[in-house]
Length: 497
Image (cartoon, rainbow, N blue to C red; front, side, top):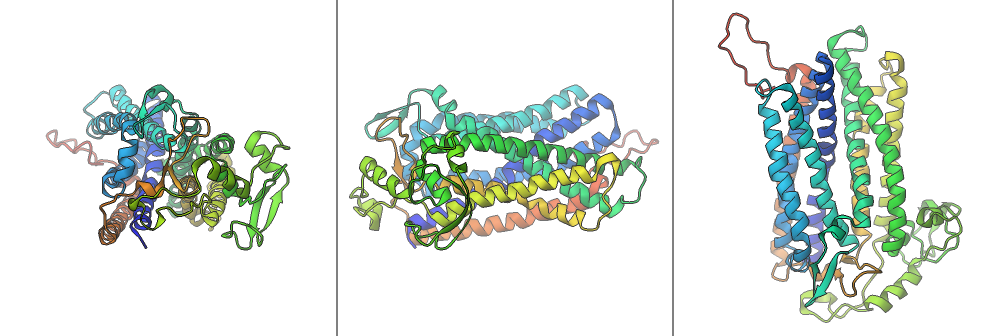
């Protein structure tokens, strides 16, 4: 294993781990804002309890997301310094915007929301959680704008062998980010909705299967379950629509990724969508691959036309070699890859199965949200013993769908770390093998991989412990105790709920 492999593993481990926290925070932030708005408008105590309970879980997750996110920026200098020098003139603007929002707007208004209970007016306090939740989505937009530039470089000119940003507007309105942002945000709400359903179902089964409908705590969990179910159903519908748009952009911008997603080795017209494949998907000639396909569906997904042609891997390899070169540059920084043939085919098992696992786990989560709504119609509490355990297990499904989606997105771009824009400025691309830091040894890279993985493992234990503790405590664990009426000097800290 060389430095490049270790650096890629390290970035993959830390990024996937970090992204487990991000969608839950973004989704819960807006849902908590909606809950508090319902309390503000109606005055019903159940909405206050929902705000307090789900807000506590959001805070735990947000704190862990901040800690793990900082490591992402460190790695640009640790293992990917050549990449940082190449994209630095472009990434400076969107990352600065994200930093200002993340560390100023988000932190300021979240702090006001935490410490502002009973200190700020209800209207101002409500405005704080809305400002925080909207800032989290704005921060996500700027990060996605940077990532989308790596998928589809726009708004730049090529100067002295480096891309330089000449239009921040083009970067922020890149067609790739305009499709990726709603898809990502919908994924965040899918995670948050399933999270609400699973935990609420567990509490209902644990204590409230036989309690009357007007029981105060039963109202909290029943409302949370229904709210999460509706959020999940709408989110998964949005995922389907935005995912279709992304597939059409992928057909235009990264045709090799489209072919790899289908293990489509030979050009087809029309092209069928492979539901399931068996055989040796690893082999690029696909001679041993047998697929169960839906005729012409891939052509429609690619170009909204059931009769359109979709290029296969074998044809695309020749086109890529003709346009971008058949061999890596002769450069000692590339190590063993210097001057060697370029493999333009992504890892087929990862891309093929990653794409299907993303869709499959998303479909399971969508079905679970719809089932939760059906079983709780007419104010009924599901009495089946399997429902609560199944709902808890289903919490993992949108997390897995998000993770496999990002793995597919990033692995399908290989061997590029900055993929070329077929209609953009010539020469603006970078191979992953060129992006790694030249001065890092195998031992140093391996040490940082082991160290960060160990730290992240400890943090995972801490987060699971905290979440489990407050989930089990329920509403009682987050509501502050009532002040004794005879002791007016007693002051329970408003944030210690």
